Image 1 (cartoon, one colour):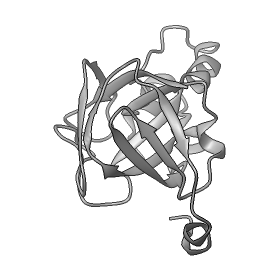
Image 2 (image 1 turned 135 degrees about the vertical axis):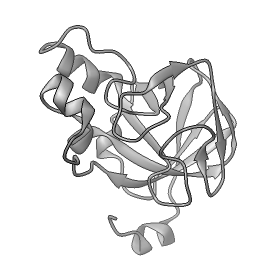
Image 3 (image 1 turned 180 degrees about the vertical axis):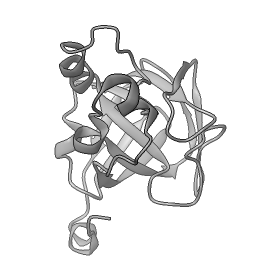
Length: 154
């Protein structure tokens, strides 16, 4: 399980551009990304496997086109329970939401015709800050049982 691409954008609702690294900050998200802020959707992730499904319809799709911050490989993201902790490089993220409602006027939907983020993208908050680079390994940290009972889908 690893990071394929890290991506940011200056505006919400637009595709993201791959960058060399991202810097994560607690209670903020990714420094320089439009979705940063003290809320429950600081960092978005999408699996490369989801991108490949969509590439069957539009082969030119690439990492960042679905406005995900981190594209992963080898992890079934959208089946992770809320509260799951992902350790990526020196950072740690906590899953807060699976999928989302696609907003009207979404550039991704307008360009591609449909968006996979509402069903297969996940959203996280930063629990341990640092840098994430393409190629970083991802591991799943076991969720304490007491955390599972308190978590509700947002």
